[in-house]
Amino acid sequence: MTNSMNAALQLEQGLVEMGVTLPPAAQQKLLAYATLLYKWNRTYSLTALREQDKAVSHHLLDSLAVLPCVAAGSLLDVGSGGGMPGIPLAIARPELRVTLLDSNSKKAAFLKQAAIELALPNISVHCGRVEQYHPQDCFSAITSRAFSELADFVALTRHLLCADGCWLAMKGLWPHDEIAGLPHDIAVDEVRRLAVPGVDGERHLVLMSFGGAARHGES
Image (cartoon, rainbow, N blue to C red; front, side, top):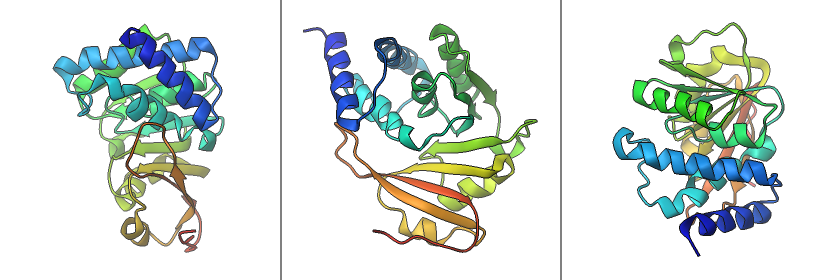
């Protein structure tokens, strides 16, 4: 069995375990993205994960684990780097308008090329610092994967989130200290433990919104 067949089977089985249904064309596009990522990674350092055989679990499935929390509308992926979770989410949700933001020009160049090669018209790319980004419209969701601590993430992006929008911060361990350090006008709506097939370490998604001083404890 070839590596590509292994990856396709791993992706298909992982999606089943996660309860995510995607058409074959979307699954093929996800695998094409992973191939493109590692092709460019040789010179652009897009991901620190060198083992390409872990791309399905640690990049594709990990990104898609937040899919149930992503509503329709627009999404900003801050510090997108190699395009995670933004590109997998854009592939899974063609109706979702996704903006990938990164301050590194080489990474932004890859993101633009990936959107072209993968035929993803719902993706736009912005190269620059997020605090200096002032688009005409706000976003219904803002996500990041290991971009910064929660307080910094919120501070740098609050001008970009719609009043009824939601932050989706991807984390490893349950971020108790980071949650305690959030401003009082930010509500933690949920901390959801993510089960990602093939990923051994803990994964959590912190959902936040504009609100009062309410904090939800660990359950």
